[in-house]
Image (cartoon, rainbow, N blue to C red; front, side, top):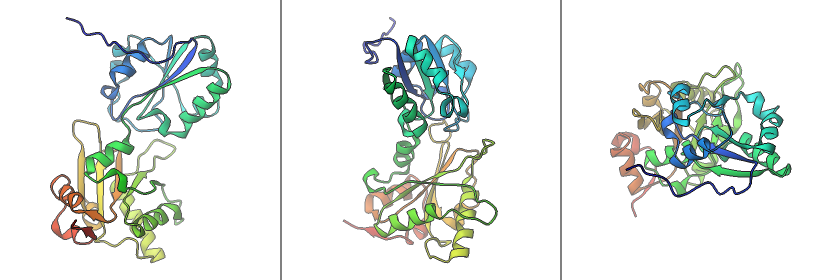
Length: 282
């Protein structure tokens, strides 16, 4: 017996623009709702530059959708989005994007521009690394402070913001989710590179924010069949074999006793590394 979904995207009027989240890692992260929305569209576009999806197969995705999506580059969305919106003025257009659509400001801008032109807009959520990394770490979501991206250094020039964000969050007992940069050629920063950069900054600035014993959680390829979640000291994780990207970091703040247990049993943290951070017994 063939199963048919009874729901549909709540866009009654045509034309329209539908932003569909692809989730993480590959085409298998697409939800049933996202799949149906894309199949129902007259035109399908896809971009993958806002988040690296290592095992995305465009041929498999095309087979699933029943048509080949048109690939977009950064310029198509950030400088020449008018072409997509022209289609959306006359037909039903789906734009497939990594993760959850409106997490990236690029997609927010596209949705806003569409609404300004009187185009109906719908959003089909997908799994985001923002929630998935927090979930996989075992840390409590409401104890996270401001998140931040660590960019590649330019020579010996460091960007102060990432380090200040971690310092401010730690002062409040909050955790920090740190995204790792992707350069203009598409190369993703690794956890080892990130921690080396962080310790170079500490050696230069001597702020006392990061020590070799500082507890950190490294996560790799979340959403894949082979994710890695490892908690330990900066010194330990600098050489830990996380494998290929994408990678992301979490710097814990004050730990609840359940978070401490989660890092020990779910993320392999040693008792020694956990002793470097304060925690609440109740």
